[in-house]
Amino acid sequence: MKNKKILVTGGAGFIGGNFVQHMVKKYTEYDIYNLDLLTYAGDLTKHNDFEEKKNYHFIKADIANRKAIMELFEKEKFDFVVHFAAESHVDRSITNPEIFVVTNVLGTQVLLDAAREHGITKFVHVSTDEVYGELDFNPETFFTEQTPLQPNSPYSASKASSDMLVSAYYETYNLPINITRCSNNYGPYHFPEKLIPLTISRVFNDQKVPVYGDGKNIRDWLHVKDHCTAIDLVLHEGLDGEVYNVGGHNERTNLEVVKTIINTLGKSEDLIEFVEDRLGHDKRYAIDPTKLEKLGWKPTYNFETGIAQTIQWYLDNKQWWEQILSGEYQKYFKEQYSSEF
Ligand code: NAD
Ligand code: DAU
Image 1 (cartoon, helix red, strand yellow):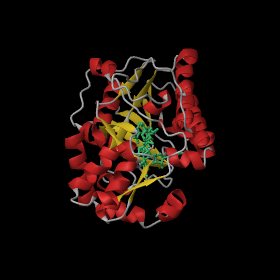
Image 2: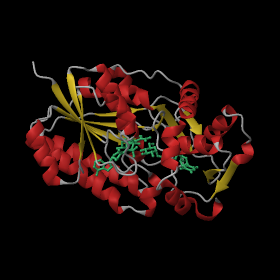
Image 3: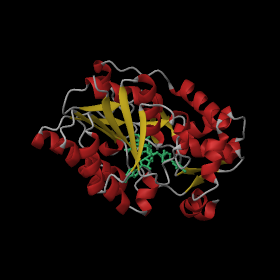
């Protein structure tokens, strides 16, 4: 019997990269095709061990390049698509929204057309809780799959637009899709522009940590490996057309997160520097994952075990993040944090 072919877009990034590793190791009967444009956020060194693996393949391509994507689908005849590729950083979407529309909206639509034309048996669209907008600080309120979409940043607006296109392809063309909406991820290979790896790398180097506003905004943190098992489950067991929220009830204020990292690394809380707030900064995210749990998913990490493992990973893999910090990133950091640092 022929191996199933799975196209993973964005498999050189943080979550897609962890997912590729999960799938290549777990399913030797699948051929995993990692398609990625290798933007600033993409890095293939994380897959160095896989180069010899027979069931791993890499394709450099832009999901918004219709001709290239159509030709690829024609040639490879994929069975499944798991779509991670995106511009993913909210701050970058505030300074440069256009590329978010091109990649996240147009790129998704190109993939949907290719999937429809070539009879894909499942298209999993990896989305985010940010499409629901923000919650207030009442700890009894959560995002469910019924919560109306109300995105507040250019990033989340582009993700909500892509979600609606994915749903429309199910309703209009019967394309077998699922949408997953996950809360904030953390773990190995998280790009150091995001709060947790940014804090670890800066605290490690005794540098100030920029905390937006009063630091009381709340995020619901999920270890990336638990996100990967959720997507694996949805890919194999998800009911066509359904949305699944992914989260593990690990709500923390940003200040709690930063202090946990500082204390674990044995440094001083004087490193915290409150800076100007993010524009349109969502107050709180919190996921109700009941529907996914009913499908059979259970996270393996809580925030305490996950953050300890993650900090240790960053200590053991300094070379990976130091090489990122020494490049283009320095220009980005100066522009983003300007005079304060
Ligand atoms: P990331 O920024 O680390 O990785 C994105 C990857 O997509 C990179 O490898 C990049 O090179 C690639 N890419 C960008 N534009 C491309 C294009 N035009 N064509 C092909 N490849 C392109 O992102 P991430 O944090 O791993 O997020 C992955 C997905 O998960 C995104 O869709 C994001 O919206 C979603 N998500 C992220 C989180 C989170 O906490 N990071 C939570 C929920 C959902
Ligand atoms: O909720 C899921 C989303 O989580 C994903 O869809 C996004 O792709 C992902 O980037 C993430 O978005 P956030 O904006 O929540 O993550 P970020 O790490 O950028 O910020 C987390 C919180 O920390 C947020 O409240 C802003 C704050 N923050 C962030 C940075 C980079 C700071 O206080 N200082 C900072 O320097």
